[in-house]
Image (cartoon, rainbow, N blue to C red):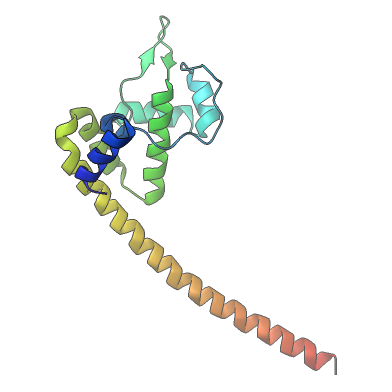
Length: 162
């Protein structure tokens, strides 16, 4: 999807492109209704990430500023959880952490970075498609070998039953 298409889609759906760029699809794990304030241990439970990883994401600039309680404890919002969902998807693509941090910086810089974000995500998409093609080739080899052994097993069973 081009930047222009994204902008047009946002205009049609009434959603902000800035918000949509920062958020992933809705979280898989159910969050408490009406709650938008989570401790680090709750985020660990929702995401499967460790507290160490969450702190590291914050330290390297991958997470936006995380609010703190009056006692200094981190307080995560639904928007933070949505961002972590997106980061998880980017990790699954094999995107290097440095590129994820660069993407986060671009998001924080605002709308004037759409093209740079687009190019970064487009490059990642090309890499993912290449990996999918490699995996499909690998799967074809495995399917061929499995078929060979299944046929050989049936032939042996048939010989033994004679």
